[in-house]
Image 1 (cartoon, one colour):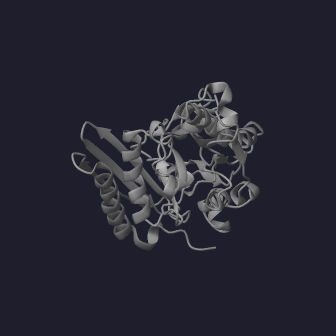
Image 2 (image 1 turned 90 degrees about the vertical axis):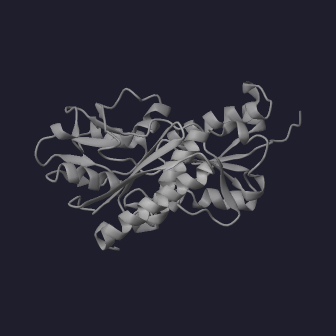
Image 3 (image 1 turned 180 degrees about the vertical axis):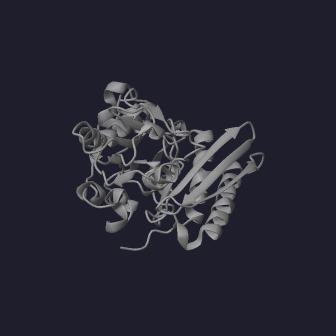
Length: 318
């Protein structure tokens, strides 16, 4: 076997990103026919610090949106310094840069948001005026829709940082993705989980994106990483994201499910203050071009929500 790396992986340097990249590294090595102990040699991980990692004291919308978690990694991919990137799907903008593609969607983890508190079991149990820490505009709006009395305060940072702030008493509760906690071995930390129909997660939450150059889309090592049902649910949810011009200025949630040859999708957008919520639900047959049908449903429902919500679902530009 050649001593040269066969697939160079790019990822952010957070614990979660490296845990996710490590999982995919082992699977890529297996797809290349290498034993587990050879994974680092045949598929080394390159850590790339993004602007989103460096700036932690402001919301993403104030510094350029969630693309700041992918921009530097995508530049390395385009330049040929790496061969694939491992992203959290919810951090990937709705549109791909020219020359790049999402080549595979591995099997999705738990899609739900997790409620974490030192004292209380559920969002409904928090006392009047309690402080909820989150950096997500969607989580802010959905929480205020259910509990308009809460004080929602900005809490950015990686999982360990946010948990430390909770332990230090800087918030009464925080919301995190259950998938990330599971991947870090912290799946027992949540007090409860948010019903994805009551408060749909971010489009693509719980899924990973394997991003490559367009010309490498059909590389032999890609196929074993792909999971059809996850691809379909993500296609539907990201279709809605595209229709809603999914930036960090729009609180958007989407939840897709596949049962047999039918995909159902719930899409919602809210006013940032949580006072108004706009929802659509529908289903699509997967009998033909399933990915196209899933995306088309997302676009249709997303456009309907956007038309109804109008300016109400946009956070004014800073």
